[in-house]
Amino acid sequence: MLDAALYGGGGSPAVILTYAWDRLLIDPVPGPRGPANFTGLRPLTQSVWTVPAEAKPIAPAGSTLPRLAGELPHTFALIDPLHGAEGITRQLEELIEHLAPESIDLLDVGGDILAKGDEPRLRSPLADALTLAACCQVNSPVRLLVAGPGLDGEIPAEDLRDRMGPALLTFTAEHVEPVSSVLEWHPSEATAMLAATARGVRGLCEVRDAGLPVLLSDEGPTVHEADLDDALNRNELARAILATESLEEAEQYSREICGYSEIDYERNKASWLGGQPERKLDQEGTLRQLDEFEAEARSRGITHTTFRRITEALGLNGKQRQDLRALLLSSRPEQYAAPLWRIPAEASKVS
Image (cartoon, rainbow, N blue to C red; front, side, top):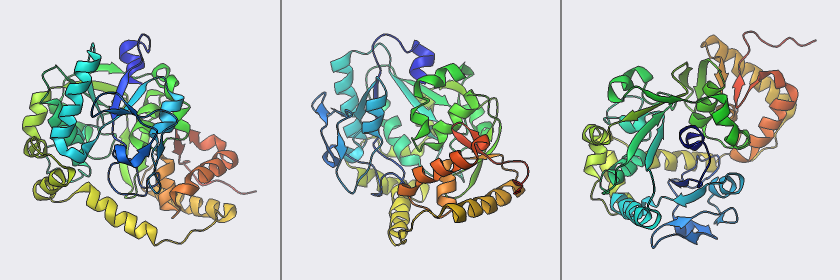
C-alpha cells in the first residue's frame, strides 16, 4: 500500500525487510522465526535471506511470508532478531551496501513504535524497539513513518499527535487495490483496519483476544512522518537494547523496563491453546454463538470487528478461521465491510 501511495507502485519492486512473527492462529510457536525455521530461502547478503513463494516454514512453525511473496511483486527479506539489535543493524548495513537504495522507510502501523514504554495499553514493544534501535545505528538516512495512528489498539491516536508531524499522505481505496486479494486471507488486524478506513469504513472496531475497541475515523488512513532520533530518545527499551547480541538479552530488558515480554505472553497463550480440544465447525451452533457475540458487542457500542477477533471469541482455532470466514460470508454477505465484519445495528430477524 505504501509503495503504491508513495512511489506509484511502478519502477523496481520494493524490498520489504520484515519479521516472520505471525499470530498464534497462524504460527503456534511463540516468538519470531529465523532463517533456520524455513526451507527454500535464498541468500541476498551474508546475513539476509529472501523468502520466495516456494519457501516453507518447518513444522510446527507457520508463516504468511511465502504466500505473500507468491501474490505480491515485491521481494520479502527476513528480519532476524535472534542476534539482537546488533544483528538487525548488520543486516541493514549489508542491504544498504548491496542494494544502494533510493530511499529507506521504516513503517509502523498504529504508532506504538513511538511509545515510551509505560503506556497502559502497550502490548508489543519488543519488535518495534529492535527495529528502531537498528535503524538508528546505520549510516544512511531512514525515514520513520506511522500509518493509521492508534489502529493497533495500543496507543490512542490523540496521544500520538505530539510525537509525529502532520500527515504525509492519506491512503485511498485505490492504494488498497494492489493488496485487496491478500486482505481476504491475511490475519493482520491493524492492516485490515487501515485498509477499511482507506475504503471509507467508520465506526468502532473490536480487535484481539482481549476485545480492544479501536476508533475507525478520518485519521485512520493517514500516514505521518516522525523524527527517528526523537523516537529513540523517547523509547527507553530501544535505547537499552542498542548493543544487544541476542533476542534473549533484548527480551530480558523488556521484562525489566516494561514489566513484561510479549513473547512470554505468547508462550503462556500457546500453552493454553495447546490444551484445547480439536472440534469440528458446527455451522448452526457457530451462527448462534455469533448472534450472542454480536449482541454483546452491540451493547458495547461496537460497529465492526475482525475475523481474528470472532475466531478467538467463539473459541475456534487457527485452522478453523478460514472455514468460519467462508461460513459468515456465505450466510450473511451484507455484513462484510471488506476486510472487516460489520456488527448490525439490531439483531437479525429470523423468519
